[in-house]
Length: 175
Length: 301
Image 1 (cartoon, rainbow over the protein chains, first blue to last red):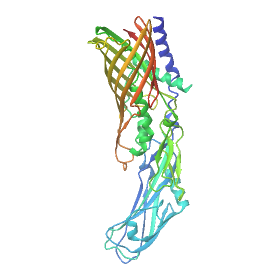
Image 2 (cartoon, rainbow over the protein chains, first blue to last red):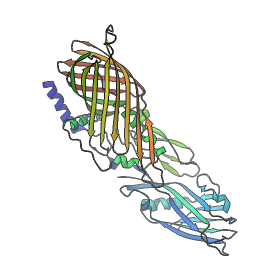
Image 3 (tube, each protein chain N blue to C red):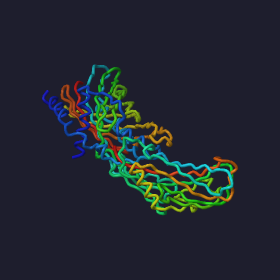
Image 4 (cartoon, helix red, strand yellow):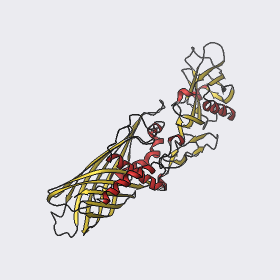
């Protein structure tokens, strides 16, 4: 009987020293795979051989707000063209919050396959723009992508041809 | 010291059961919310050790005697603690970097590891990070459950295991149930000088709303008693699997519905116990892909 009581006593006492093996959730850093920043620019018809525009995205709309962000990292940026027309050759630049993010150059049709910063020779990255994007995400500031581009053929109609920019960002933080 | 504290955790579970304090938390735990950040490919390696270790624990500690009467009354209430050894290889895994990265893979922490790692693309200096730091820092991963054994009818004994665990410090609430049968072989082959039995055991473990385990164990048990001392062993084929199902918090990531098999398919058990009138104490070691240990106390006989 004494042995049984001892066993029960041990069971009752040991909980007091328990749970240290589970890390406090607030000290665990977690990567939050944000939904991509997607910015789409429709081209207007007419005689103009230039196009441009801005798209603003609130980064806080892309991740679970119950996490406290401690940093962010850009792991890819892609640029692609969509639409029925072949708009010839051209190129342009994309800036983020006023800082050049990357330039691109090539034929419109080459970009119908999305071109990645990681693999494409048609895109040239500007590290300062990447840093600006990271700072905006970490600081929970609005991210505005601005495009300025040129083409050699004009669209058949307005808003049927598009330039699409996608930025893939990991934010990290803890609960 | 951590190991001993985790052993404390294991006993907390028993204590909770004894006190019948087993409410299920309705809110999602931190671990569940963490998992929901990730897609199927990323999360698989992060959580695979949980499938291996839980699977090994689920199929441990059920049987510690093969001495079953052909007919007679047997009733025993037992508290069993299991602990699976966490090896270094279960603390890291290889994660794919995003397409186009060089190198294409990198090593980072599992949920049993330390700080996560990252990979930097050699051409662009873009960086990609492992999904999370480790969540559990221990060398022994515990589980505990009460069980009832009842028999003996036609040389057969039944085992019932059940426990409900409340949500604790970021881990979701859980419930486990198991049912098994152990059948005496000696009644058919009485000349064997050892007690020999065969067993089959099935169990289910629900871990929060996202994770479900199931386990099956089929084996041969032997034991030999000398006075109050009992030595026992077993050879067992087993299978365990973990189903992980959730919708990632990133709406652009497809829903996750994956099943992972536990590492253990075979185990050999050696153990020793003491049986004094209506009190039993036992401990054993189990060797397979995962090494684990179980120990317990029993009342009745």
